[in-house]
Figure 1 (cartoon, rainbow over the protein chains, first blue to last red):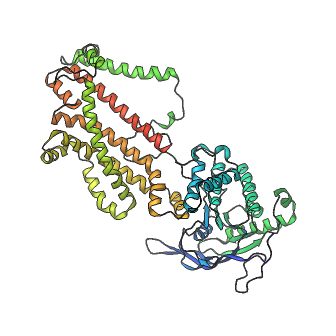
Figure 2 (figure 1 turned 120 degrees about the vertical axis):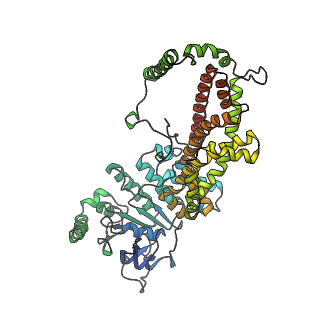
Figure 3 (figure 1 turned 60 degrees about the vertical axis):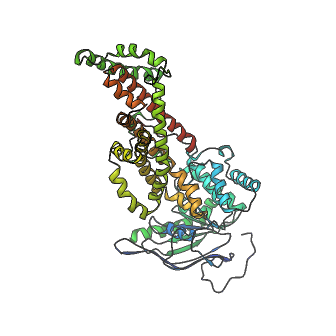
Length: 280
Length: 282
């Protein structure tokens, strides 16, 4: 990590990696849904997690373990049943542009071009910027995800990988404090996925910020993130383990794949997931 | 986004196995020609062997040649070209359709976005929707005491239901993802309506408008038969009273062609506004 190491706060629970100051804090979080019959299902059961301001976190677990729900709670799209979720000391109660979501199915507005989709987000959030600043910002983010050639195309006219790049550019363009990604590469084919992982990592390595990424791909989590949150199976999912990924950024996928640590961590994570799977 | 298939909409699609195939020029000319040829043959058979009143296709064409070549002639108050008659009917349809759409789109929006409004208005819509709009003619005549406003009122009623129903469906089926994007960006409710919900439901709204306009064009003929005056519907009935079936066939052709053009125009408008191809309607 490039940033200076702040002193550890004594109050926080031991969930933060040592060189990160607490930024996003989730404490004793419970989430339950009540169906129309009145039955209560606990989805998340006592989640405690602290995320640093430039930390890349992956949340890994089986389908239905509530990892997306956790992400959506941070995004403000789901309510909290009990506990607190704070960002920079302020509780999260509703969605906001300081926490932008990248959706699995892109959620681009199909009646707007690539450029207009990004512009819409900027128009909504950066209300004080001048039109020239806004259009610079749009162009900058279109370049960032290498979409200059497709800038004036409609979402129907571009591939899935390109759509997700637009989704990422839209999210980053409003300069969020936390980037939330809900299986961002899940709908892509394997080749596109690898390329896009590299691109996202490049962007993150040059503009570090807090990232929460939900995935069920252990390799993806190991390649991209600083820490991996392993969730137990739902309902009433908990954080089973948190793995610290020791590889320095910028990462090279071939180098890290050659290191024995990579396989140790990978096996450990997979064993954890298998164990959880068998238990159910 | 995929083009929505609207339940209850009048848009029958060609079967899926036709999708994605380009027609060759040969196919595009020969098969329609076979279809029309068959229809003319049927007409000819009925006219020749079935009844003495009907003209054969050839007789109808000869008798109507003048009317087709000079659609905008004026030869006295009772002898206007068919173009003028169509324009009179179109004027009524446009006025009624415009007024109906101005009412129907906001009402559909309200039903689609508010549960209470849905519960309050939907039963009315469901009861009135199956009523032939022509049944409103006496009500309109009693209110306006004039034929022309009454005809426009009936078209107004006609244009309400499909647009209301489809708009409501469009608004209530805006994908959750789009609404979450609006939430993430902290849009105001008004902004969410105008920047997300409205454009997302436009394809549905257009489906409603196209169905409304199609039915309005059907209904105007029946209404004019009852109200009289200058118009294509009264023309049909008037010519039948004179046992001039040639003119009736002329009117049928003209009504069909105009209806096709109306739908095409609205489809073009949809494509311009939504930047997406309008769903094909058969």
